[in-house]
Length: 250
Image 1: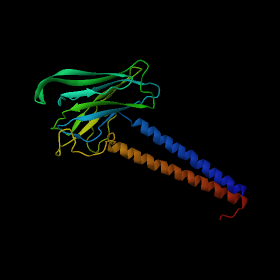
Image 2: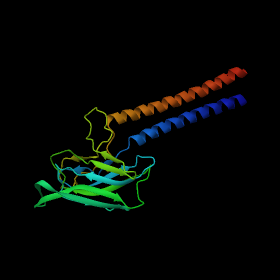
Image 3: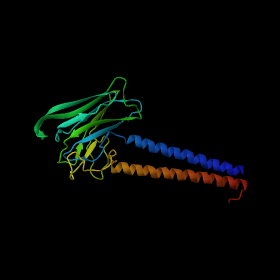
């Protein structure tokens, strides 16, 4: 009886240790793949207006994020850009002259917001292991493109600047190290230009590129293999202990 209890304890301990290692490995991979993303509460319709949320994770173990600078695309000027207050942060929308004026609500627009900068108040930062979200409303969205690139610079309190500015990879290519947030646009399908005809649910941050998905599947398989190895080790220990004591296997 005592031998059987010893074997069960060995099996349980081995499985628990290896399972913990697998979870730790998966958690580390998740942290490494985090980056600044852009999302909307419903589909962003070409020619309409939308709220954009920048989700900013802190990727450094010992430093905090204290500044964020979003650059809006010059080739698709947005006549209307308004920001939502974020507690503990100052926000500034910086305009620039347009090379070519655009029409908005029947009037000519000669300048538009090019950058939006959020700066943390003294003593405020995005702490390690945490994230924050920053909202703005933009429009009218262009009707001649299916996406807007939103390059974003993330500044840490040690002076490090991470520039999330790489365009999306070609199909089948690996995700770049510093991908820019991307806002997907859909064609207008009736209704008004504010996207009320679209009934899609709130979007999650953009899905990981194929390489990230493969990595996740690899890690999941590795975790299962590690668990199976732990189970085999535990069973082997039970059988060896039974043979050594002459206990018949049931």
